[in-house]
Image (cartoon, rainbow, N blue to C red; front, top):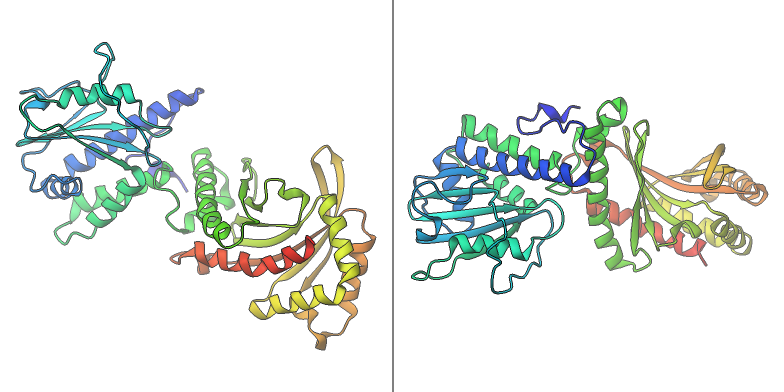
Length: 404
């Protein structure tokens, strides 16, 4: 996959400083918004402005990085709006008064017959109250009501343009531009997670693009946030998540869910790879494996029964590996057993289960996982957040038992 096939996505170049990268992205996002509205035609711009309560706008024009309008001042327009766009919802308050020396250059203007919209964009953090007050000073007029302030997010704009895409009169270039703008918001991590696509899985086959790697990790992070919100509401044990770093050559991107010290207890993990999304119960560090051994020794039949109930919901695999410490937090893994959950049934006998229990008890550092794979065909085009949350909640009966 190559994100640069999108008409708005640009090469970042050798930019080392985070502030410079953010400034470049802010400028490109604003430019993409203005070009979509400008080149998409009057119908597209009018529909967009109606979303911020400027109905039936006419004669729309556009400026980038200008202090005021070229003909008459913005404050002389009847309808004046300060449109602030951020990645996350803003809590910015604008205290009265403005420092007249503050250098306020709006990111963009959208203006026309009787209206002016000043656009300020932030991709990280909140608005500067001083900057927003200085922007408002461009729009204040003693003879008119005060200008309106509309604060929104790029994710909400993603939804707005998704609705614009459904306009019956939208064809040709206008439709193409909106589709590309929506995709650009997604590739720039401004829209949040919007569903799995084939690109999420194909990335792990090639590993040939750093921008795509950053996009994948941001998508996994956003998806994990949505999952945690529902998971924590149902089961407070899961109060945080941790996303793996995703090195360039990694074959998967993982997220662990649990308490903040999740590695010390049996917890749950999801892992995105080329073959789908794995969901597994994970017992790894010594405090967790010691607890696992105690529970199995004390309540072997109850553990097996709980696993049988989980199999009745949906089959899974028990995977047992031996962990050998190489250095501080680096371990080698040696596969020992892989047992399909159907072998836990009473009809399958006790041989496989007994072998698993004995091996867990004999290994110095056993790594036991309960794995289930959701292939791409079950994820693309679906609503995967609730699908994954349901599985995690089903698994939690085992998690709770192994942490007793």
